Image: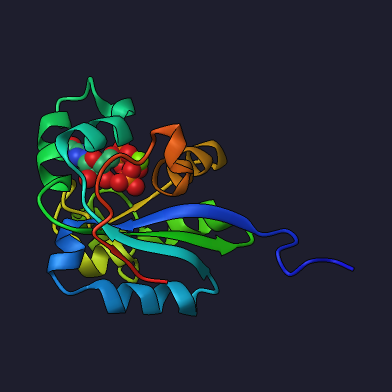
Length: 158
Ligand code: RTP
Ligand code: MG
């Protein structure tokens, strides 16, 4: 017997503060489900400066880091674990390019084209590799004793 999860991969998707406050959540979730992803886990939460700096540690030396932390801490985010074959690459592809202005031209049906504003306020996040996906899923959903999630989970949605 093969399990229902055979061949499935998991990735971390996040609707960023501009996506949540802009009322794009339902539209984005529809696109996710229409593209064949399952939503395995889901939470609404928010970053503080500390948790945001740890989540985006790889960008700590970039010029845009301070601005990125300010942006990602400005409101609630919706974090999901998506499940499907080839989930990491397929979610990146559904999101579109980082720069939402570029997305509007080159990938007009992508989520960033629909909901994003510019290269920073681009509405959604997706893990960039299987390794990142494992780290990011553990960051939000790993057990509390690991110390990875020490910011408040404001609201659980089953
Ligand atoms: P993400 O991590 O959010 O899925 O986006 P990404 O892989 O497409 O982009 P990445 O290079 O990892 O950058 C992380 C986030 O930082 C902001 N950013 N701002 N001002 C800028 O030049 C700039 N570049 C990136 C974006 O919010 C980007 O998603
Ligand atoms: Mg990235």
